[in-house]
Image (cartoon, rainbow, N blue to C red; front, side, top):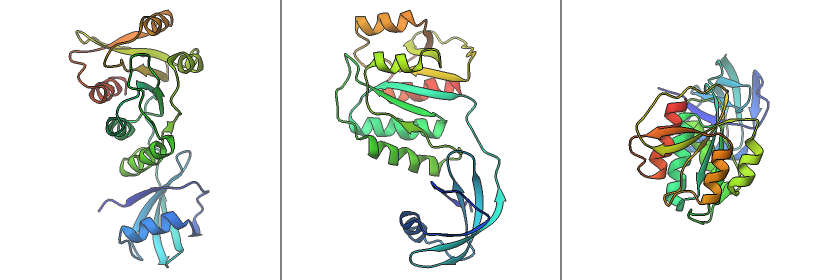
Length: 224
């Protein structure tokens, strides 16, 4: 049986008592018992397998079984997508976390849906998605921002690819940091299109764009 995985924001030692109330509650809700094993990872430098030696209502005694080699995506991907209805934003966050996106940057696009976006809830969602996956990292989630600000932050830091419909062709990223731009359903405004062009963003073509969630997933797969 695959051990349950939990993200923790603490230093992981070889033998320790865990007092994180939320995590203890998750361990109990998963019906874990003394003798069961769990994986704890800090999203940074540690991914470890522990055995539950003692389990009480508000604390657990854990002993290290082994260290795992960190499993990291081949590249750091910054996904920039126009805000969508809440359920679609959630689908995108879940699917692309599982694929290995490192940073989520929701956009207030000129022709996009100007929907509410709960950043704290999004952070919780990607954390839970990371726990269900196998990467050793938890993605960051930014507050919604306009395209100009997002590109200013990443210029000189990431190589840009923009999702487009067309005949698929080979792409050859030359950097470890990649920015993927997902086109709004109603397209980019003239101002946005000119800004993207000025950065020399390369086309990342899909035969069928489909909905933004599917487009984002397909583009991430082509990069990673």
